[in-house]
Image 1 (tube, one colour):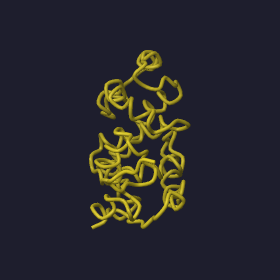
Image 2 (spheres, rainbow, N blue to C red):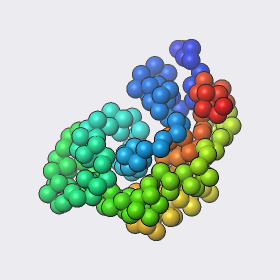
Image 3 (spheres, rainbow, N blue to C red):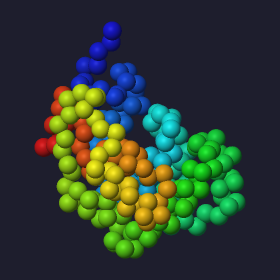
Image 4 (cartoon, one colour):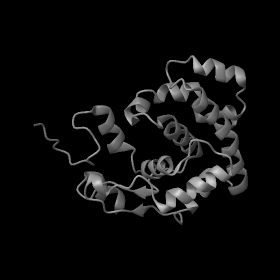
Length: 193
């Protein structure tokens, strides 16, 4: 049995360089950039029903296909752009998810207009400070929380698609609004201090 010399969260497959790099440099790190928020909302929605690895290997394709995740550019996409993207093998070619990304871009712009930035809106849910959890095992991770359910309901009220409570919780974890590295993971102390 191979053991990883670097203690990581239990969801990271040992020896999977793509997952290890994502875990060690991105997952749980607070983000305050609206383009990156739009990227993550898009990718989390695209991941629905698939593995995160499936999305990670296509992330560059998504960046190219969706104008570097510029929400204003994506909001201007029309039916021809959707038809083109449905044939783009560098992304998940699911028409509903592609249409949702274009649709969500317009909703994202609405949140920016109302709050000054999407970042200000989303971080307001946690009083602009990460919530630090102290999970010890993979069984401690919830699939959704009251917070993710409330944010999901608010996003849906604003017209967003593919933003269920489980998708939203994954988004909160990955962008550091909740810090869910397990207590034995080397990133827990780095990000909770």
